[in-house]
Amino acid sequence: MHLIIPEKYEPKLSVRETQRAIRFIRETFQDEFGKEMNLSRVSAPMFVDHSTGLNDDLNGTESPVSFTMQDLPNHKIEIVHSLAKWKRMTLSHNDFDLHEGIYTNMNAIRKDEDLDNLHSIYVDQWDWEKIIAKEERTTAVLKEHVRKIFKVIKHMEHEVWYKYPQAVYHLPDKIHFVTTQELEDRWPEKSPEEREKAITQELGCVFLMKIGGPLKSRKRHDGRAPDYDDWNLNGDILFWYAPLQCVLELSSMGIRVDEDALRRQLKMANAEDRSQLPFHKALLNEELPYTIGGGIGQSRLCLLLLGKAHVGEVQASIWPQAMVEQCENAGIQLL
Image 1: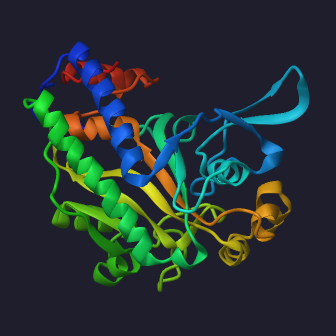
Image 2 (image 1 turned 180 degrees about the horizontal axis):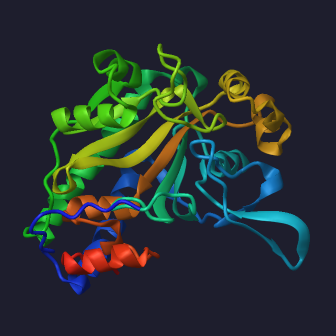
Image 3 (image 1 turned 30 degrees about the vertical axis):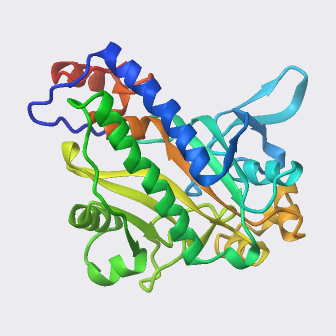
C-alpha cells in the first residue's frame, strides 16, 4: 500500500455532485468515443472458462480470481483481467466489416494490484477492438488511433468544464510519441518508472510505445502478456498528473499479434504451450481478423477530469483501514 496525500486538498464537488459528474462523464465519453472510432457497444462476460485461453495475463504474472460452478464442477471459471482476446473472437463470430469494431463496459477484479491513489482491485474500463487490414499493422495506423482517442478525451475536458467549471482539471493540448528505447537511451541510469515520470513531467502527455520486448540493455521496460499486443506496435497513454505529482496511465492499447508475432512472442516468453489453446490455434491458423484495440480506464478518466486525489473518490471498492483513515483525515471522500 502506498498513499500520496496532496497538500491542502479540498474536493471541489460534494459526494453527491461527484456521483452526478461520474455518470455524465461515463455516458458522454462512451457515446463520443464510439462515434469517433466507429465502434458498436456490446455486452461482455465478467468471467470465462480457463480452458479457452481467453483470459489475459496482463504483464504475465498476475493470477485471476477463480471458482467452480454447480453445473460445471470440473471447469475452472476465471474472473476476467481484461477482454483483449475475447473481443477478437467476438469480432470473428459476428458480422463486422473492415474498420468496424466493438466496445464494452468491462468490470474486472485484479487481486494482485498494489493499492495506491490510482490502483484498485476493482477495474472498470471501456474495452474496445476494431478490425484492420493486415497491411495496416503499422506505427502510422497506431498513432492515428491514439490521436483520435486523445481528441475525444480533450473534448471531454471542455464538456466537464461547461458543467463543472470549478472542478475540471485542465489537460495538455497535445500528445507526444516516444518509444521505450528512446527513454532508455536518454536516461540509462533511471528505472523505467523514473523515465516515465521524467518524460511525462516534461511533455504533459505521451504515448509510450513498444512495451514488452527487451531493450538494448536486454531488460524490459515493463512486462506484457505475449498473446494479445504486438510488442512492436503497442503503448500506453500517460498523463502527468500535477495534483499527485505522478504519472497517470489512462490507456493501454496496441495492434494485436498476427500469427508471426504470436509465434515469436510465445517463444520469447517461454509460453509456446499456449499455442494449443483454442484462441491461439485459431490465430495461428489465420482464422481471426487482424485488429487494434485496448482499454480506457473509466474511473481513472473521471479522476483525471475532476482533479480527484484518489480513485476511491470515483469508484466503490475495498481499501485497507489505514488508507481509509488517512484519506478521511485529509478530506479525501472515499465512496
